[in-house]
Length: 235
Image (tube, rainbow, N blue to C red; front, top):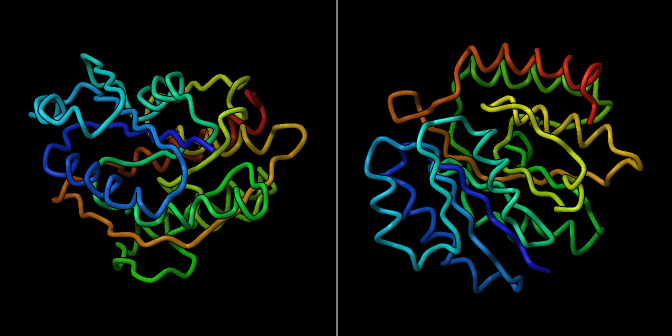
């Protein structure tokens, strides 16, 4: 089973090489064939230079001249994947590749189609989250579940893992963080219904001073996307 890891990057010069090294350090614990695809989404720091210096740490690098958003970067990355399974990996240190074996386990044990890594299910270690950020996540997840008829605990998680065949006929529109909702609702609209699992993951959340990018506008966009992809654009 080949696994493709797609990493969208925007101004993460302090962490991108660390993430790549972490992925390589856990390779020995994973029997799968891995490919790493990085999409540099118009970074204005020296992220691109660092990636050029460390070509041995990834398989493909896609450079976008102007920042276009996480959704656009992921869509480009998906188009280059050759693996049967796709893992979305953020370029910061909030999500740890050490959780890959846990995320991939349901595919092996239960023939899963989709696995979400939840920050709100039990895991070994998680940073204490910002209160209002947590409340917003839970409200968005609740509204999403009402319209998708799923019982997810963390719809906005950055760790979404799925079989590539599921997206072969899906057209993705969201350019920014709305891709998190669009993915979930278009997955939930598939026929036959895919087998979806959640596993608890560790989470080392950043503050906005440390570089966190998602904000209040993205929360309102998420609610808009829930309605849009539940009623108007289901595929």
